[in-house]
Amino acid sequence: MYAIVEISGKQFKVEKKQKLFVNRLDVIEGNKISFNNVLMVNDGSKLTVGTPNVSGVQVDAKVLKHLKSDKVIVFKKKRRKGYKVKNGHRQAITEIEISDILTGVSKKSTAKKSDSPKKTEAKKTETSKKAKTKKASAKKETQDLSSMSVAALKTIAKEKGISGTSSMKKADLIKVLS
Image (cartoon, rainbow, N blue to C red; front, side, top):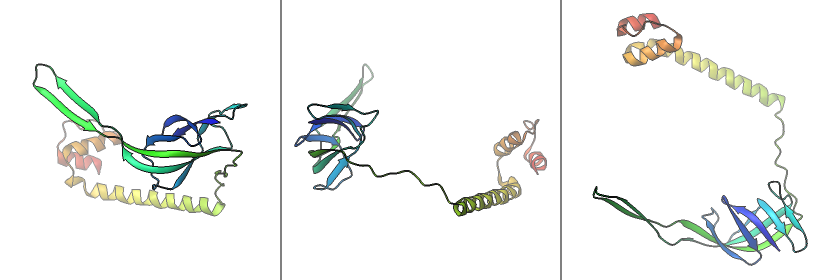
């Protein structure tokens, strides 16, 4: 029996008792982890292909250890320029052992329940409070026009649709905007 499972963005063909190296997983060494993103399962007599995932199938694995892969040399050179850079990189990986491929597993429903009327009313009051604070901050901006630069005043004038601001001085822009 084997399965094709997606682990941290890559697809692997896995069998029971198989050891693999995958990109670093955020699981403590010795703990078990299960993968629900199974793309295909073959149990010897029956081949099941998911669209995109096979429902009710789960792959269990045990994290053996975290380590780094072999070093990859990154060498950059531009000819006739005297430019050479040599860097190395070691990818962080995790060694896992597939403990079991389970079929017929029921997935927990993750459907979100609709918001109650009280929650929607609370959201509406929050949005109205935000709108009031935006209006208050807009009033503060009109008071702080003298501290703004000429370029900033011109962009505000352009947003409001005021034309002919290109030749205006700062004092004239403040009068037009207030």
